[in-house]
Amino acid sequence: MKKSLVLLAILTSFSLVACDPNQGGGGGGGNNNDNRQEITVKFYGDYNQKVIENVYYTCKVYKGDKITDIPADPTEPFYPEFPVFKGWSVKELIGSEEDLWNFATDIVDTDDNTMYLFGYWAAEGE
Image: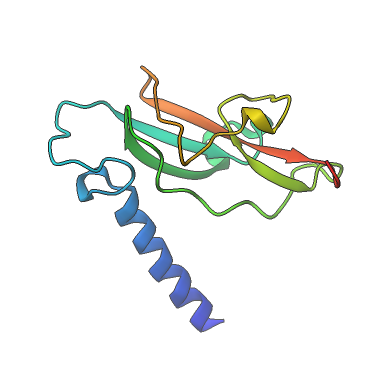
């Protein structure tokens, strides 16, 4: 148990550094980011849980960059009939996996200071 807590603390500290755009992580990347818009990305496990105390994960990126600080997939489903986590989406209700955020190619392109990504859950076999 003690080793798990130490490992969690180490991983958390790495996540915080990777999420700090001034440290070159979190999608910031360059040295001249002073005039670029910084966006807070909030991940919610479910669109019905969009309140401040239910944020699953948060990081910061600059507008026009990819999200590189990606949270681990949630393991606890919000509804028993939809136990399989499929990914994240900017849409609160999505119709298919085509609506999922692609961390390899999608860039943050919003004029707001905050962007929201919602967990997409499916039934077994979907």
